[in-house]
Length: 139
Image (cartoon, rainbow, N blue to C red; front, side, top):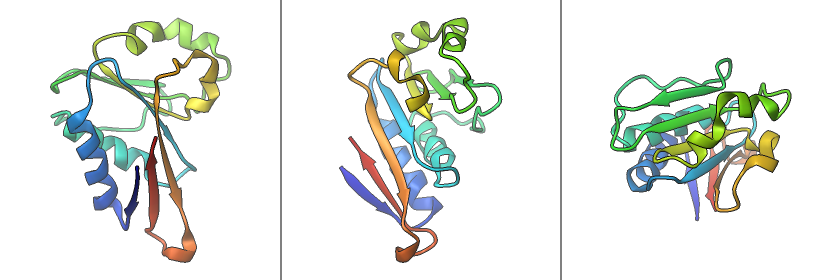
């Protein structure tokens, strides 16, 4: 599925629509360059799960846990992972194979740990189509 976003509100709403439909145990890989709107998408995704608390990118903590929605959300940002062993230290398996939903930014850095049934979300910009234009592909 390919969607077009013409601004943050569109990106938020696309994330929200997906978050409202997710099921326990699903893992989503959120990919795109710095500044394309991954955190905005994550905020919408959390809103779709009914999570009302502020959503921040877990760049420095690697993992943010949100338990107050209809399903727990485990938001990973593995950009700063130097070695996949760090994921073992976090106990990633309990999150990946639990009853919540995982949203993982920069997942290509831990490719060998990801189960095959993950769903990929690519956010791409195209400045020729406008500064706020984003192409969001959910595979």
